[in-house]
Image 1 (cartoon, rainbow, N blue to C red):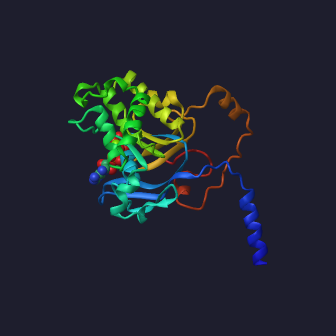
Image 2 (image 1 turned 90 degrees about the vertical axis):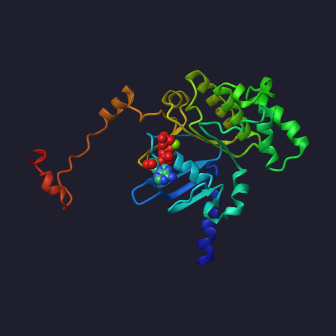
Image 3 (image 1 turned 120 degrees about the horizontal axis):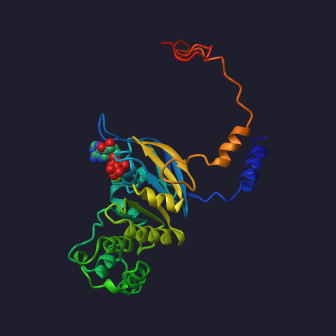
Length: 290
Ligand SMILES: Nc1ncnc2c1ncn2[C@@H]1O[C@H](COP(=O)(O)OP(=O)(O)OP(=O)(O)O)[C@@H](O)[C@H]1O
Ligand SMILES: [Mg+2]
């Protein structure tokens, strides 16, 4: 009997739809409590499939950077499990963290470039630390600088570049190793709207090469334009997970509203659960008792 059951389960597994791409990021009940009253993240559960482009939105202090820092193991969760490409992050020892991070490109709001190195050397540095040969560096750096529109700025130093150009260098550096996952925490936070478009297009182009991209942003216009998946946080909780979404929760359009009106009306629920609500809302619909 047990064998038959197992065989059946195996057949079901094989017959299951294969379109579900394996999760690159998986959070299960993840919380981060910084101190007794400082909550960074609260019971976050979600997953991101390979190749997705996800915006992380929410007001300041809602937990976006906390989520990013957990992903790169800069901080540890106080509860829950985080898996990246199937691997439980709690099993990666401190010593192994730098190796783990090689799989992740990271772009910050403030660029974090090395001020005393040229554009070329800033990008080459990312390859040097991961042990690339000189030959690889000679081949890869010009390629990525072309992709990011920096081919003419090879020998400039960061302080000779505009903010947008500096952020392009940061993106080039994050992507030169072609990591499977790219995280950007407010990458356009310091840029004007037009320059922001260029950076976001670049991230999108990177996503099109198959890299999973997660972008934390306050840039409502950009999120609305790009219509990707949106995860919204509020006080550390995920309050929205919507595909093809805008910065704000979507209002119903007229057609959808019409659909709703045509639906049979829900039966009025007169019976209240036998709990404290009965005190506040009596069953005769007369509204709250004053
Ligand atoms: N090191 C820390 N110690 C204590 N509390 C912290 C720490 N870092 C963050 N927090 C708290 O955790 C919460 C989430 O912060 P987080 O930086 O993740 O927000 P955010 O969504 O990135 O905000 P912003 O949009 O301003 O960047 C905030 O209430 C913040 O005060
Ligand atoms: Mg932040």
